[in-house]
Length: 195
Image 1 (tube, rainbow, N blue to C red):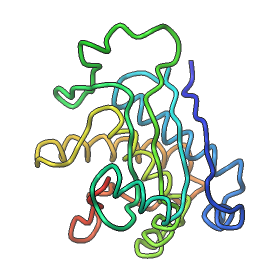
Image 2 (spheres, rainbow, N blue to C red; image 1 turned 120 degrees about the vertical axis):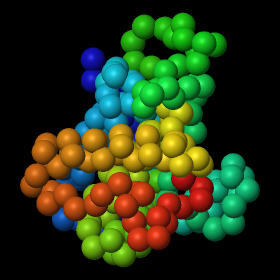
Image 3 (cartoon, rainbow, N blue to C red; image 1 turned 180 degrees about the vertical axis):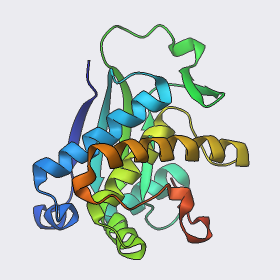
Image 4 (cartoon, helix red, strand yellow; image 1 turned 60 degrees about the vertical axis):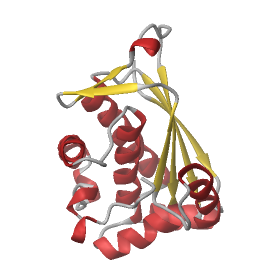
């Protein structure tokens, strides 16, 4: 079974179209769906998952970041997992209490991406907003399945999966001219605190 992605666009159509350029809407959605599917496969060994992806703006993200993380201002990506996960030797597994999930696609949770912040980060990085959103989607799904970057070892495991997924995306979407690396490859390791 394939990864099922439900998109929620909570920004104006004009802002969303600007973030997708130069891709068409269909190409943008395929890129992001591929990013989510590849991440699920790399992190938990299955594409048989469902993911909610919400694209919002600074105002909504500022509220979410304060309400859920206690941080002021917007952040680039937040993840709201529905299950407890444990990460062992670079692979994520459902925690015992969630191990008996029903058959069919496992709903992992919601990844929320601030499109305004993604556009700013894309400009800083020198790549397209669509590529930045795909990268943030990868990062968000890793948070959904238990990966974190608080400790150095955890960051290394998360970085390795991001790079693996990004290499796959580069192969599958060569037409995009893929440029971004792992979020951890940014100057001064500027991963947003709320991510």
